[in-house]
Image 1 (cartoon, rainbow, N blue to C red):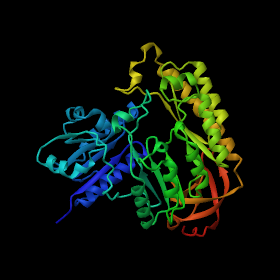
Image 2: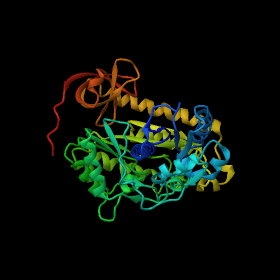
Image 3: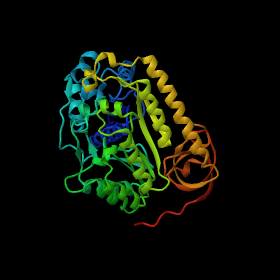
Image 4: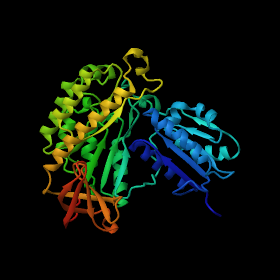
Length: 442
């Protein structure tokens, strides 16, 4: 008998990618085969993001496009943060969608698909504070590194952010469960893990904190690289910073969201730190970890942001010296506290777009200058995948720099030493100096 097929299209952050891996794992264990495209699939799922309005509008349009790929008996569902936020509204707006399911409802997915085949349309958006999908075996896309969720939800409630309302309150997995999954990753042939959480460094299972987790995961035999995202500046305790510095497998890179360089704007964002507090956090990290690379997130056009506030953001970018930054225009999300700010504080799209362009230019200028200083140096890279340009490979340094280099697909997953020969300003070109011997098992 032919097994039914499932296609999942994923939008948004690494947590969504991880959730898709969990869903595919659950469905393949329930008798489905995963396919790479929607044509002819028995089940089509769209795993969604709600962080910005543009992301939601893109998904609405895509749902209409995917309808053309559906057979008369196919089932379509919407999962993830946008599903959690809109719930039954999505069923009303998209009659060809039968399932709307939030991030805590994936355990019921096989049953809800069966119900949909019998004409039952379902919304499942309840939060479950105990759900960590511990018994799910993820079907991982990446064969080089593994995304491991260690925490779900968020308690910070920044005024602009929809995440607490789409992923619920913060809760952490037990350290033992995370270590068990890490050991499983090594058994599957991978040596790099990325620990995921909305404010990952606030991790606590009631007994162990994030410092304990870093040491435990970093000490798993066969693990060579440990990364984590995304932390909050307020949760870098001395213990956590010491663990980063003292655990050899933890990489020399921290993604440290700043959001704004203006204390005035940060206060309205409810980020719970000042410009000076952010600088102090960055300095403590760099003092503990030599050659640390810092990347960040920055929002422009937040309600009430003045020219002076924006100038402070530009000066903060120059003062901190980020290796890269993810930059965004503010996007108002229904249900967030930002919607209650006075309308006269709104920044026009024209002004926000101009500020974004200026910010990107400053970020690129700084990135290029720092990258130029690395030319001619040698470093270890992990080859991750084929590059978009034919005949080349894409690799990553420990400090999260992208290196494009010649090579063959059989080198993917290997560690090699490269000489950095050139830079576009954002990425490097490199040449293999020698293969690296595997590190001794710990």
